[in-house]
Structure formats: C-alpha cells, structure tokens
Length: 393
Ligand SMILES: *Cc1c(COP(=O)(O)O)cnc(C)c1O
Image (tube, rainbow, N blue to C red; front, side, top):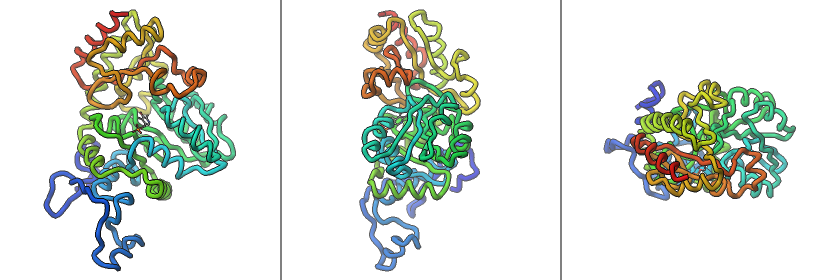
C-alpha cells in the first residue's frame, strides 16, 4: 500500500509493508545470508545497481528493507539505515561523516557511550570534539571551529531532560555548512520530528520506544537527502553494523503500536510527575510537561507531547535515592527505557559511571538524580509503588 499521503498511525501499521507472492499479512522474516542470482548477467546488474534486488544480507535484505522504509516514512526522511544497535548507529554516523582533523560539537549530557566512543576511539583516530550545554543556544556558535563538520544533538538529553532548540541549532549549523544529527530516541517520531525542524539526520536506538518491548537491541539512521544517505549506507555496509532479519521483524511488529504506547505512557508520566512534585521528600523534579519545567515552552514548541521520562532528586541525596531504588517493587531497577514496563535507574552509578565526577557535574548529572521511565501499567499501581518506597526514607 502506498502510505506516502496517509496519517502517521496508518504509516506505523502499513508503511514499508512487503508484498510477497503468497499475500502474507505481515512482512516475513527472510532469514537468509545470501540471495541467488538468476544468471551471471542478473548478478552483474545487481552489483552495478542497474536492477533492484538483494545480494547479501549485510548489504540489504527484504525484512530489513521493509523496516528501513517504514522508519524513513515515520521521520519524513529520504531513506533509513537499520543497524545492530543504537551504538552501531552512533559509530556508523561518526565514521561516515568525520575524518582525521575534523571536529564535532555535541550536547554535554548526551547518552554516555555516544560521548565515550568519540572521546576515546574516535579521538585516537584524530577526530576532535567539543561537548557543551546545547540547551543554551549561544554555546553552539561558540563551540564551532573552522573544521567543525557535525553537530550531534540529543534532545531531550539523557538523563538531564535538557532540551535543545532544534530549529535554532540547525540555523546556526547550516550557516557554517555543518550537518546536524538529532538523537530522537527519547521522543520517538510520535512526539518530535527533527527532519521537519531542519535536521539532516535522525538517529534512534530502536531498543527503546520504537521496538517498545525490551526484547531486542537495534539502531537506525534516517537521512533527509540522498547524498548523506549514501554515505551512511556505505559506512554501514563496510563497517558491518547491519541489523539481523529477525531483529528487523520484531521491530516492525513492535513499532505498529508506538502511538498507543507513547500516549498511554505519557498520560501516566504526567500523573506520576504531579505526584512527585507535591511529595515532601522530593527535592526537585524535571518533566517537560510540568509548568515548573524550565524549558516547558520550548517543549510545547518542538514536541507534540512531553514523553514519559522523569528525572528527580530525593532529599537526602545518594543514600535516599538508593533507598527508593531498593524498595520499589513494580518498577524494575534497570537501564534502558521506552518499553511497556516501568524502569528506574541511577545514572551516577550506572549509565554515566564511566564519566569523571567533574564531567558529570558539568553535565548536570548529580549524585541524587534518579531517572524513572514510566511504563503503561495502571498509573495507580505506579504511584502506590513509589509512595511506599519514598516512605522508607
Ligand atoms: C540507549 C540509547 C542509545 C544507544 O542505543 P543501544 O541500542 O543501547 O546501542 C543511544 N542514545 C540514547 C538516547 C539511548 O537512550
């Protein structure tokens, strides 16, 4: 079905559908590593790109292709590249667009490994980087150098829930001929469409909201134009960070309910945030939907909903935060987010433990910060669970 002019939820269900000779209702899993050619000329034409078809699964596969087409339509991009993990997407992006002597500007509180891989492995290859608080838009202009080639933003950032104004950031970058990639993992295309706001590339950890069932890891890059897409595709094919067909099948299955899941989770998150904000043992709370959230207006401007990620600090710092985590029963103590189940975690000792304490403080990841990824359970149960845990402090 041609879904180009259909609504977003219709695209979630039908975009990229693979129509086979049996009339399969869903895209089947093409669990094959290679594809045979009809004859020598057919093989030659496929390699030369003169005929459409599949050669070898690292290069392309019908199930993966269906997912890539669906994701591109959801983000209003030219085409997508699916990868083995979100980090495979990050490292493929850096490899495709940066070389020795180039410089990248990025959000200070970006996902920990996205920064760690740049400051260790890519730095060893001679790629320079500046991490800055991109929620203050002037900081971006200040960080740009003559050799800056990429602006890599994460908004909302993880786990500080800091937002970067995508429209304004793209204006600055494009004035300097710099490409902009936005990690849209936290919002998913249901709530935010970076390409429509001016970005050149969108990155996803499919592990989170898009797959939504905490049963695979996966990643994707979606480019707005063909040239950038070709560079990403080439880097994926040569570096070998491709997705597996079975993984692609699960993501296609999971993404169909993305709107339903995201809407229910954010409805819950709003109620949980209001409960936490009023709780005497909660020192501070960050949730874009709260009026008290410093960037509430920006959230309303560039997002169509406030998501389901909440960060809060408990009075009593690290120890009190630990008590809460050790006493919740419904929320699982785990990293990750975007699944149907509620998860709670402590960045200073988990996801961002590889950063120095100084770098964490600079990035606003304080010791008492607890991150709650609100799931789609009954909200009364989520709040009761937090309530009994907070009472233990
Ligand atoms: C999880 C995550 C990643 C990395 O994705 P993996 O699938 O774990 O490799 C990147 N960015 C953000 C914002 C994430 O939450």
